[in-house]
Length: 165
Length: 288
Image (cartoon, rainbow over all chains, first blue to last red):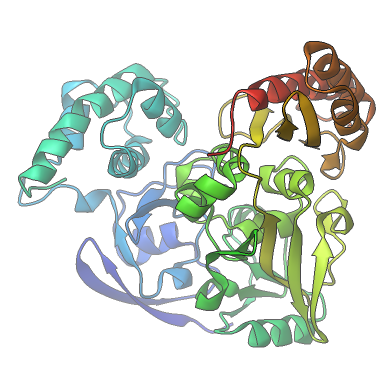
């Protein structure tokens, strides 16, 4: 089947491209838009490395076709830092050693971002359950858990002050 | 891996979708939330000639309460259900079951119609549909028909629907005010496929149980309504002895298979243990 055209918004920027209907959204982001921050892991929705925000909600970009994102608003890991300032979640991951090899990190951050939007004041159990959506094969979960818990109140404060959250 | 080539269609209406399904005569697959189908495509376990993507059919996404029934458009996302005030007040059993469906990023995309049409026996929604005696509305080339939960599931990943039929609505009777409910599940990790799950609802009148609903997921090729266990409660009430008898009976009502995740014997054991747990918790958990 012929290539299809798509227009979408990625990290606030209008983008467009053409691809085969069978192209996965994660591959479109990486290969066509050169946004390689989103990682391809298991390709069956288990590992969570490819998690991005689709219209404000976390979703697996390996389980969507690129063509399905026509007209959508996406946020990828590249969209977190603004004006050279790290997002409070990124800052907290750095402080609390929330990453080792870094492969799962984009998925962890985007999943945590959605979790904290849904539950701005999560319990530890909430964070554990939420982060179970992403696998870290370095098994560095404790640092990740601490980072997300540390970021939560900062994001609430930032949101009150109308800053990056 | 990556999906093999397919024709891609994203119809804007149900009529158009059904026409496309009929045109491919069983060689097309419906793409709903894609959380089960896309992995199958990526691993080329499914190689349909065409995908009929129903995500652009806006008319298939809604939650409506009408005369004691809650109707869901087939494309209503699991995430929408999780946060729906109507579901929280009228179908808290469904809300609780939803929390067991994968993870939040999966529920952002996964749909109620897709989960039911996929007919994975370990999935939560088919079990809730079975427990509450719900039904689905399907549309095919010859019009619409209603299929009751009891007539819907045929075997593993197989429903009684024709390939050119599309699930358009899922209907569940609202739970009676004050009815108790619980969804118990055992999985290796939260969010993994259930090894066994139990959906339970109890309607009480004083010490009597006027209606009990129990269904098991993961304990056979289709979700199983545990009717003989329900009858024990309706006859003997909700005391410890009756609950234990119902839990023991539940294990005799299922015919699980062994696979790499668990033996048939273990699944049978879990059916009994989780039925007991679900009933005890349902007693303490009334619908608002």
